[in-house]
Image (cartoon, rainbow, N blue to C red; front, side, top):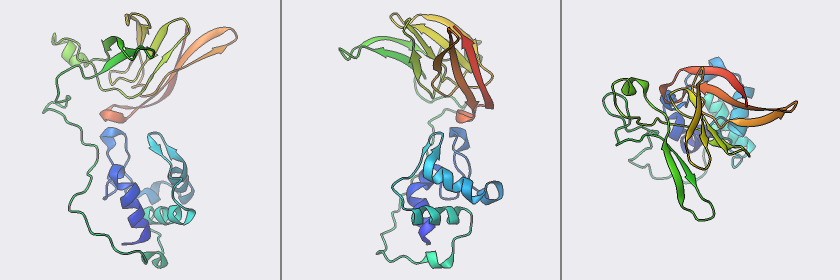
Length: 230
């Protein structure tokens, strides 16, 4: 096994898998034929700096980063195929990725709620309120109580006491009362906002913006930022 291959197995295969197939349903892309889609500079920058959910690998030396990039692109030289360290015993177990526990219909195979927003008093450590966050519209249409939905992304709190959060698979952004948890407002997004919203001011007016990239959890892909005026 080459040095680049060993580094890939140790640092990358838990997410991108040993066969490079990744986990598209979780937003982790396939690396198969990456050399046909991206150049070496792009791949090297991702290995060094990371992107999205993936962190960079500052613990790797430049030689190690070069080896894994060369391995991914199929350009690792034969001189990199030697390894002076003692061989480690091969484990009979391997990590096969973040497999989600779903039922036959593709819903979480656990009792709802499948998504919650929780307010915690940081002075006491006690929960102030909890609200079910998100829904599956097709289940709601059948009269099933709100189940909540898988979510990726945090909330932002304004000085005026509003809690804004997107995050859910149902492609919506919501505003809650900070003190009571009451839902005050919601709006539909062009794709899932799996990100933490930002609040900013321009020319004396306050705005809320969220990235709508979708993709994770089998959601459709998006490419927009949506801003609201408060």
